[in-house]
Length: 54
Image (cartoon, rainbow, N blue to C red; front, side, top):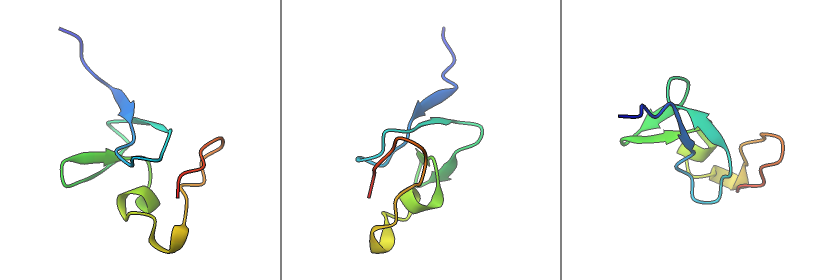
């Protein structure tokens, strides 16, 4: 059995991989940051290099 330690951020437009240990967990989903978890209120992106989610 393989243990999963990272996964794609649950935000549909985000390209970030997130460590399960460091992720924000909301509603049983894992996010890379609060902006993604909040649904990008006022168009705020995650701000991670190379990611253009909004």
